[in-house]
Length: 391
Image (cartoon, rainbow, N blue to C red; front, side):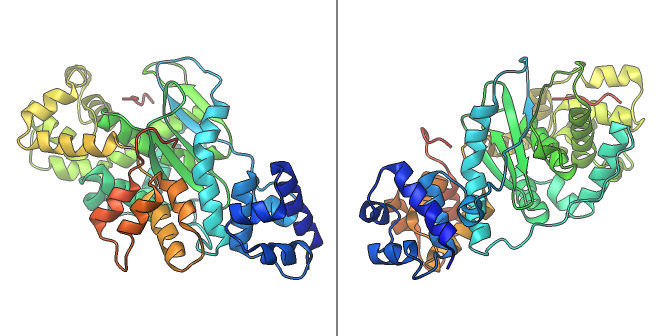
């Protein structure tokens, strides 16, 4: 038996100022089993350690080894403000999902993450962004993902790159999104917003950080067009442009068509980006000259929506997905499976989604429908939970 683990659990109980019996009730563990484990007569299970870690605000790794597994570092996208003292607030937001991911790892439900690319810096951020985008595009069905709703893009990122993606209604002032990664977790946290084209660009921007492993460390910049931003931010922006608007796919959409205003607006709606982003991308690919570029970048998203038949419904759908707080779909699905297998309690689902236990009892059955899953993903209000244009 590992006496050191029992000693660290005792330290957690002492820190909380609780009796063994009270603590056993808190973690929903029979007091006799807790007593046996504390006295080296049985081992703590991986699930029990995960619950104890959550109750004691420590990590499972510390309970198991005495060493903290991670120092939470973040890559973040901000706008319109100078750097602020954001670290504590940002980390508190991310920690909820990072800890949830560690529980899945300890339960053996996440054995490994998909491989990241082997990228070699060249000192040219546009080239580095392009190479990372080429690698990422080869791993998704670009035409069926990039020309479809952002929810499909998020699902592809979660499945293809092992990134948990969540919407948060509360973020540090000026933040659009942040990312965190280590050997066991990749997380992307997005600000809820009605500016759906900016959110889509932020998703790709944060993915660029993760593919280049920038999110192991704290990065935050004031991202305004034309301002001096860090190399990592410029590279993430270059990645986002090349990833969301691939050269080959743009050529396919333009085949046999002159780049009239009507065609330009159609491209904006099809790719679900802002007119400014599309204009800069077309210029970078030498598909428009300087005068035409200046004309096209003057359009606003509302101009494109008004010019394309059916675009209003696209916008309504995108806004509805962008402005609602949502827990990561893949993570919730994995927690559901663990709950059904008796590995975790409903308290973990409540903490992850913000949905009360009564909702879970009503919604959980042998086969949770897509509609029901979408309902439980939503975090209730009040719960914590080269030039490249930055739209």
